[in-house]
Picture 1: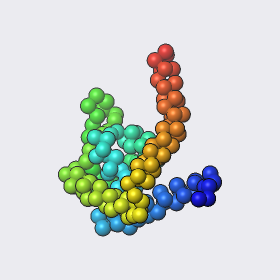
Picture 2: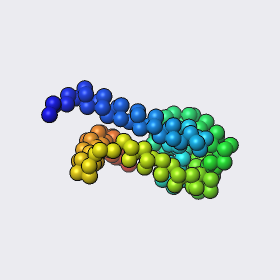
Picture 3: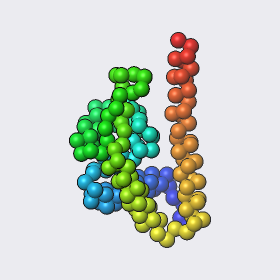
Picture 4: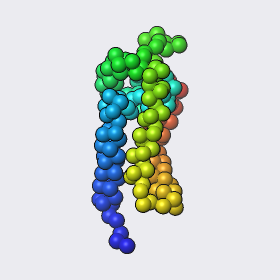
Length: 158
């Protein structure tokens, strides 16, 4: 078996993610939401009423972009903004019944995309893939965790 170069690995990971997003978007169009709106909806449900700032952080996009995305989704009846319990300046984004009903459909579409992507990959290979990706995430998240810890320590000493 030919040894995979780091360049090849990077391209494979990037292309896999791109093709999965493209496939998901094609299948998800039937619900009338863009892939960005799907991502936001999933985050809102999973994070249990996150703030707009938290959504921007999770989605790795600018807060103004999240605000515009929420505006469109609010107009469509997918989410609503509610005042934060302790800080009136902050809004939480709350899923509506419409989005909660769609969430299970989103999970089913995502499951179909993953199953199609993993055709021909046996259970042992799937577990090895999960393990490798989890290790990569841990390795790459170490800097984020260390930076967050340092920020917390600086704030505590101020």
